[in-house]
Amino acid sequence: MKRVYVGWIVILVLLGLALLAVALTPRWQHTTTPNEQLEQAAKQLLARGAPPEPGQGKLTSNLSRAMRLHMRVIAIFARHEHEHIGGPEQLKRRAQEQAEHQALAKLAADYNGVAAVVEVSASASPGSVIRAKVTTFPTTIIYGADRRELWRHEGEVEMAQVRAQLAALGIKPGPKAGAAGGSR
Image 1 (spheres, one colour):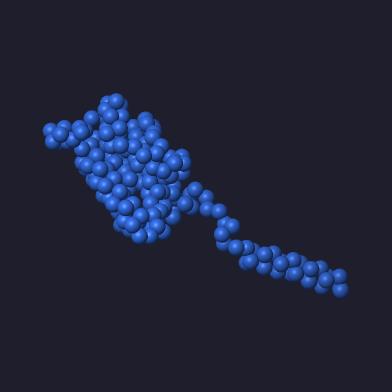
Image 2 (cartoon, helix red, strand yellow):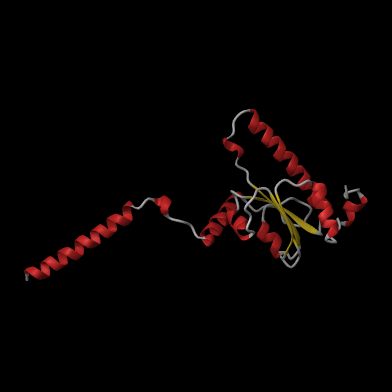
């Protein structure tokens, strides 16, 4: 009879130690899977509201939606982590980002109906960064309508170089952009 009680006591002690070990495991040791990262990114996008529809002459941030439309996609992956910088450096970086954003918006307007221009933030959409195998920021990728990668450039790139590459791939600006001199 004593042996039965001792056996149960040992089992309960071991179970208690296992539960204690699980409870004391720090949360930072839990690694998220790519699927969990995608779910988190989707929840963040839904919380912020839907971005503009890709391919409508507007700059968008939803790469997966643009890919589902079976259009050509010009994706620019950027890391926006300048919030920790203070003073003039932060103002300078924000002004630079605003100029880049305006250039991308012009590119989106010029290629309206021909290609979707997508600006992907690494912090807001880590799943897209993982799927595209982006290791350097910024990275510019041109995808075909069949979702194949046609061109990739890692590092800073001039819009003139992107436009030249689009022309080399046979991707011409939309009809309205050509009349308005959008081939600069």
